[in-house]
Length: 106
Figure 1 (cartoon, helix red, strand yellow):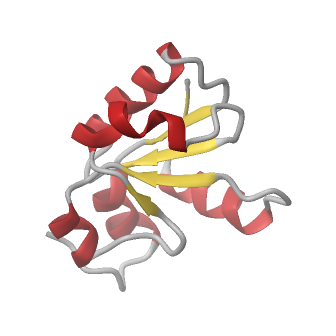
Figure 2 (figure 1 turned 30 degrees about the vertical axis):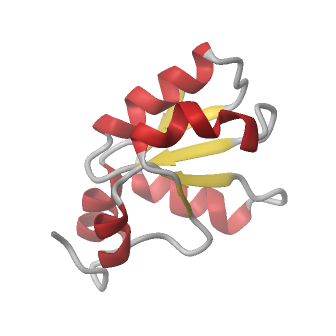
């Protein structure tokens, strides 16, 4: 599993020719407060039941609040056969703090 900090991820997303899946694994109430455009919300507890809806070959950037839940999900995805998984180090808290201070925090 690769990891990207929020600045690397922002730059990568701006220049990517093929957009990765942004998989947000937080709870709906967290997602409602702040999320990245085009992110798909599947709360962490629902990932096992949702595996068949995800493409194991598509690059997937996993996002949570601080990067801990997303790291666990990214490791789970890799163990489940996903070949191109990235953890967003620091999560949405770091994105709002370091990359886009206009975003709300919680």
